[in-house]
Length: 118
Image 1 (cartoon, rainbow, N blue to C red):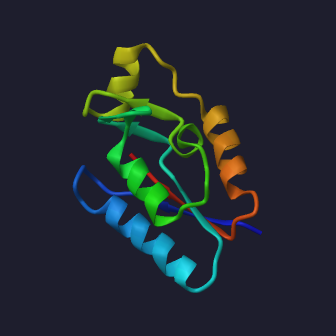
Image 2 (spheres, rainbow, N blue to C red):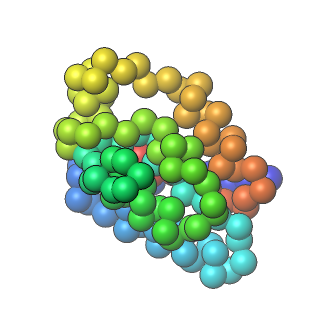
């Protein structure tokens, strides 16, 4: 049975990514099969693969489970503003069903999934 931990905080820069990555590394060090997820993110960097969120990339690096970026971070928005505002600005409805499907894919074959909130 996969366990999911949700890491949340009250603002940008409070350490959510650091805690989430630390949890992933700690569980992996004890033999757990782990993966990270950042369902909704705002603020991107340009990469050869397209715009990516630095927090999502850090989660992928902390638990290289081989998941596609779009599964780890299904909703990513370029402006570094509150994600619900970025989604509205982009005209995108955040679909909880899509997030749940991505989580189910990530959880398959994993002992622990660490989800970082926005």
